[in-house]
Image 1 (cartoon, rainbow, N blue to C red):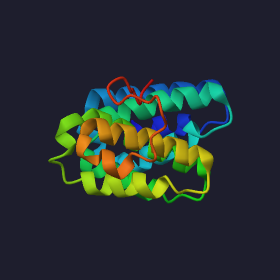
Image 2 (image 1 turned 60 degrees about the vertical axis):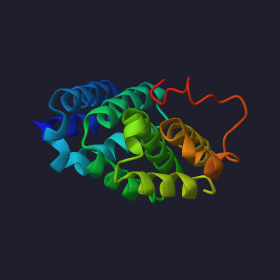
Image 3 (image 1 turned 90 degrees about the horizontal axis):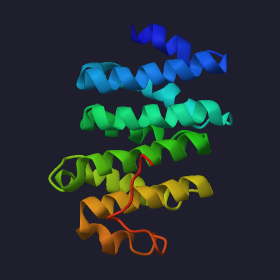
Amino acid sequence: VLESVLELVESPRSALARNGLRCLGELFAAVGHGFDPRLEVALTPMLRRAADTNNFIAEEADQALCEVCHAAGTARLVSTLATAVGHKSAGFRSKAVWSLAMVAQRLGRKLVAGREAPTMVQLASKALSDASPDVRAAACGAALALVAADPGLLPKFASALPEGWDPATFDACD
């Protein structure tokens, strides 16, 4: 099933790609950890489509990423995103970093006790100095989500957080 859906996601026809992305997001929402072994195969085209210049497709890919970040297993997801953050495309990196914000928001206070926290903090810190302004903006969102989950990280990210951003009202999926 996943391979067929991924073919749709890769389709040059925007309506097919959009429906493939919607289906992929719903599959992850329904099955959750069941797709973890194939996470990298599914996440890569999703991130690429989220960075697409066609807003029609990019918005659907963003929604699918939100579904994946809320349903997939944390360890494999963070590992896959860590690889994606090193991609050569700034748009791709930006969406990968923003996905880290969605994962941090999902974990909430459980992030503090999680094994993935140091990796997520390191990735967000590194992205704050990226050459791309889009990646840096996404890193600000990731930093905000990390601070919301663990207020002890505020000193580490205080200078990076824009004024007026409130961790209590921040929603990475919005």
